[in-house]
Amino acid sequence: MTKRALPAHVYDKKGVLYFQRRGWPTTRIKAEAGTPEFALEYAALLNGARLAPEVTARTFNALTADYVRSQRYRKLAPRTAKDYDKVLIWVKDKIGHLPVERMQRKDVIRARDANSDKARFASYIVQVLRILFEHAQDIGWVETGKNPAKGVGLIKADTVPREPWPADKIDAFRERADGHTLLVFELCLGTGQRIGDVLKMRWSDIEGDGINVTQGKTRARLWVPFTPRLRAVLSATPKRGVTICAHGRGKPLSYRAAAQRIMAVRKEIGAENYDIHGLRYAAAAEMAAAGCSDELIAAVTGHTTVAMVRKYAGPARQKVRAIEAQERRK
Image 1 (cartoon, helix red, strand yellow):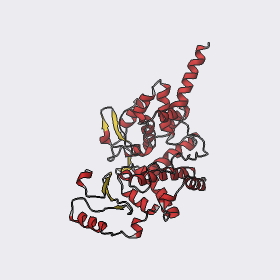
Image 2: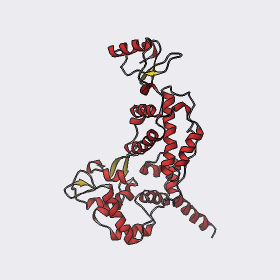
Image 3: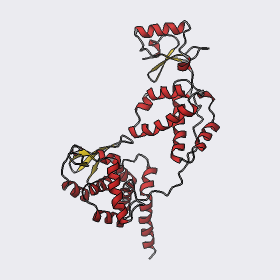
Image 4: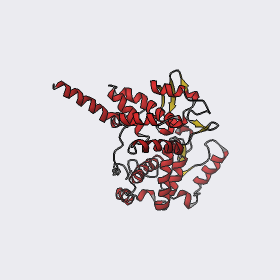
């Protein structure tokens, strides 16, 4: 709705109506414009009506509730929303009663550092607070540009960087595994997709000599051709259910069951240091070793930035280039 169609002091901010008048608190209007309910609510506000303190108070509890109702939150991928929810619970428990406008950069840093023993969660606190303040700007709770979480550094986990599966471990796994274990392995390696997306693949997703994929994390839509080895494994796999990775009477294989089966073989071949996600790295590494460009690799993996492609394929590409460079010295 355009501003001209709205009465005085009412503003449309990304589909949400607010009553804003100099010297008065900004109040969200719940009713839809043009309805009798809107007319009553608007008249009450003009006459000085106020919502209950717990609704109008600009606390983090109120901001979090408003954010969860917003399109910004609703458009999140399920996995991302699940990660954000953990921080939103922390926000309610720790700072929910505090006023949004009083938070400073030092407070964000203090919150991050207080949770530094859980590096991933600590970084998510910074990221989610940054998003909450962006939302606070959108609804007029803080001045434009005020975002104390913006620019605050994240904490890097003190862990060993994930490595792609080496060729000898891939060969050893193929020699030992069979059935669903081999199927999951080949789907992860052959398509270069995350295990969560692999377990959701359906027989009906197969189109021609490849498979359609909608990535759960990014919502990217891809069509990934089969590798010869994956094609052979799929041809030998009976159709037990709707999903490709199904067992028993057609029940989809769970992540836990898949991880346990993969781990059992990893222990047998001494590959405990190479996890399931490492197969996605291995797929990118194989393409890089074959001379594929970043754009070609991203067409399979679905990565949207060059930086992420290089993170996955960089070591393999460096090795290929180093070999070529040394060959030229002879």
